[in-house]
Amino acid sequence: MNKHLSLNTYRFFDIFFFTILMVVFEVIAVRAVGWFQEIYSVSLFLAISLLVMMRWGAWSVFTIVAGALTYCWAIGAAFENYIIYVFGNLFILFNLLWFLMGKERIRKGYWTVLFVLAAYFLVELGRAIIAVFYGSAFLDTLISFLGTDLLNALLAVLIIIITRRQNGLFEDQISYLKRINEEERTRDADTEV
Image (cartoon, rainbow, N blue to C red; front, side, top):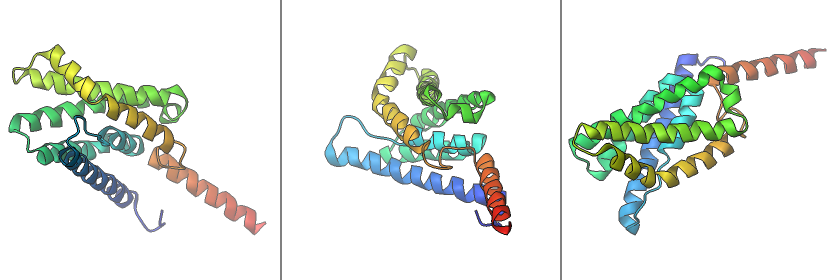
């Protein structure tokens, strides 16, 4: 990070970048379903949302809402679907509770998989709960959402496992920046000796 770039500016551009990625991938995913007449669409919503959540915590709300709005816009959804997806997807924010045990722990071993699967279930649960207010049967809707997005959940597990191996990508950015600054100071001190 540029030493003259403030943390707020860095966070803004980082979240903006991932939000643009989310928007582009959601539009492409929806359009690809139309082009190829596939039954299931591939969405990176879960993976990108969790990346931003790990990096910035509750600030991920902007990316999550943008993903829901983009998806609904791209499919030409009715107003009730906007409500179901926006508010249902916000249930993923309950995944922030995982951070009480420490973000570093989530980045290791099976905790990563549990983190992703919990987010998948929370999103589908949220959508099903909100859909009930529009007359949907809870259990049928939940099963339908879980089945439709299972492939996307597995894809998210794979993406998050890969990204956690990349330096700083699936990592709390404040901790990452502190670590990088400390490494630079140590390296500078070593070269002075």
